[in-house]
Image 1 (cartoon, rainbow, N blue to C red):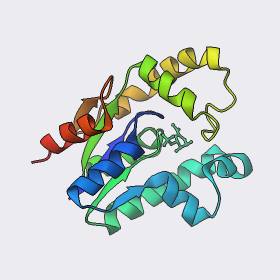
Image 2 (image 1 turned 45 degrees about the vertical axis):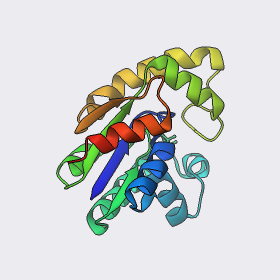
Image 3 (image 1 turned 120 degrees about the vertical axis):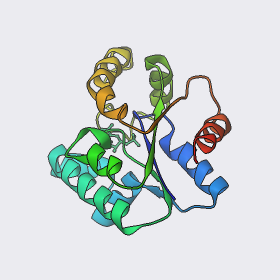
Image 4 (image 1 turned 90 degrees about the horizontal axis):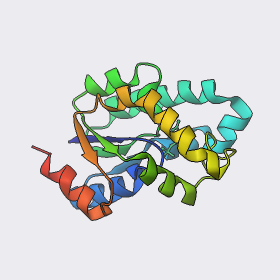
Length: 171
Ligand code: S3P
């Protein structure tokens, strides 16, 4: 079984992914962590030293590697992964089942505020400007996110509730 979790920064892909993987006894893979290990640099350092275009190319290549070389996993993508290269087609043409963890602007702002620094795209944005930035960014990205097989609302839900909802959608 291959399960792919996608969604905006702060939507809980990693937290939910780890819990889901442990419940289903599947390996958990995190694309950002995989990139950091392969490149031997943090995501922040890759953006800073090599630029976003380099990051997007690597992200797409490593996604293809993981999807085609591994048979059993729960994979958490980066927030932007579905929106670059041909990545959403790669996911949809594989035998993975994809889930969009969908949050409202308010939910995402609240969550992202707790962990802003490690995210290069928002680290420099003032807290007061964050709701407007996320609203616009999400608007640009939502068409790709909504190509996921299943959309799960995460607002006011615990990790366990989201895990349950995903599990009940696995046939
Ligand atoms: C990004 C999200 C990040 C990481 C990179 C770019 C994005 O992943 O891949 O900073 O474009 O939304 P998380 O969603 O895990 O923070």
